[in-house]
Picture 1 (cartoon, each protein chain N blue to C red):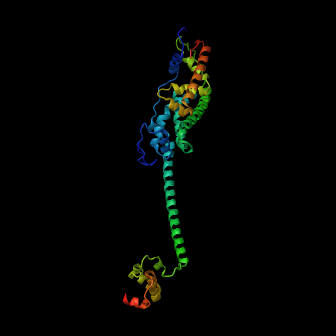
Picture 2 (picture 1 turned 90 degrees about the vertical axis):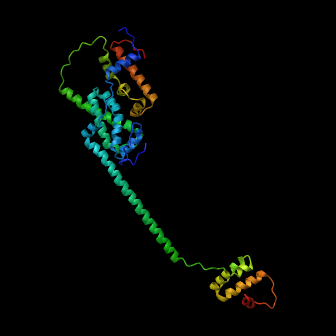
Picture 3 (picture 1 turned 90 degrees about the horizontal axis):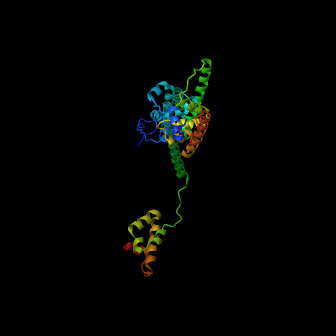
Length: 192
Length: 148
């Protein structure tokens, strides 16, 4: 790819193959297109990270967008272009935690008695969601990242700042922990 | 709960529990909703370019100043240093000359005359004669010069 000076008018030949660090350099030089391309690439992962904390898809999308805005304002503080993913994820976690605090306060003020719902015999969904909530934040995060469509191990590694091998290890431990919680819920042994 | 529960079952349950469809990023909407942040990013780029231009201008100015200073220093050094006086006698060139013919060539003789006058001219001719070897007693430099 031929690119002009970052921030200049020629700096617009961005493709899906343009490496992230080139985009980060362009964005740091004030190129808006480079930054929005980075947003497009990292947005699903950021939503997954936020959803692991908030448990709600819509709130997670709001938190991810706020995180991207904060990143745009503070991009000059990023020291290494290669750490953009993990730096952005840290901003996103903070945004999600802030949002979760506000939500807890709101829920407390508007608390209603929960409606009793008879669980369906075959539906493990509520139990799985409860088990997910009981996981350690780090374990829950890797599960959300892994089960979002289209997120490669490479992207997950960039966001978590760990190797593919470490992702697999973290994922296996998280699933074992989930299986333990599900057994307590009466779902029997899950062979992993 | 007799069905077999393995990793595939767990993965399927996780997919159902988590809304796994990857969200699409709407760049235009994000730019509208966070216009201030986006403008801050783009404006910083203009700042960077301005700083770069100023830096380049600064480098050019410093380079020009250094070049000018160097020229002045060299000029002063040339003016202050006295001209080198040649220790070598005028006829030294003749000693380096390979042959008498060269020594008495018009260029050599003219150069010698210009640098040392008539005396230098005679010295050059004497050198030529020495190169040629012994000469008859009757011949002398003025006579030879006259013949030339």
